[in-house]
Length: 302
Image 1 (cartoon, rainbow, N blue to C red):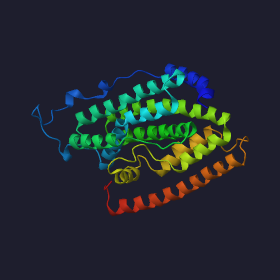
Image 2: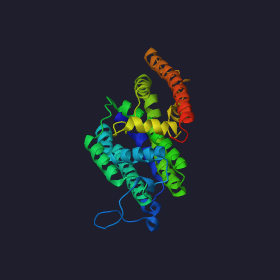
Image 3: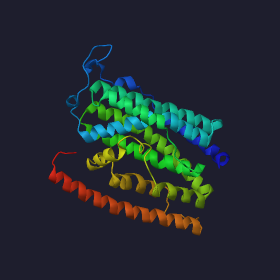
Image 4: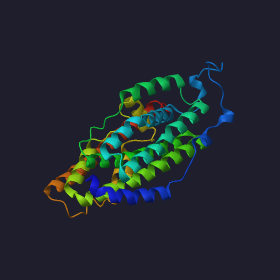
């Protein structure tokens, strides 16, 4: 599969390099508005009231940054899966270099704005990165399916965090990061589509496995469940967004429902995905009802 897809990787890599725009994390850091922290510079320690952003936005920024921090594990994952030679290797290293900007830019911005407790953030980074990341994907096809869905989800999460933060600079930064994620998604999505043409049954089965058991790479973060609920309640990333802005557009683009090259194996995977979409819609409706009730009981609590 790797050898068969390598010419497609080369073509998509050329397309990516022609579309990608250089950008620089330092221009999104408001240095002139920042103040020193306690320590060698004898500044002021961080205090909760220093941030005007809501708890849900703080959670979203925390999850985004700590997820991006775990890049060494992600690089190991894709380098092990795809290899480090030829077009595959060139893509792996290029993707890693582009992703590496995200944590640098987010951390500098968040520190300068005093959005998050820097001590707690560093303690959680150490804990999360020390734990590493293991997707458990059994095949190249599973890996391609996962990164396709994950890049779309990450794009939406970054973009919506910026829109909710109430800071024009924060929105510009997250939009810039989301643009990187979108290009990465396009690369993986079109590569997965080529894999679907090469091995329809195996590829759609891998997609069904990923879609039906999908977790974001930050799911092992400390306190992730509580944070994800607040993020969902605030409309930054929830099941509705996952279904309407990630899964459905992806499946339409792949023409998953109109393909005629599946055997009974592939058709079974199609059915699994369809049933999962129905379950996600039901779960999303239940969560909306719960969030609405909680908002009425505790206005502004999120």
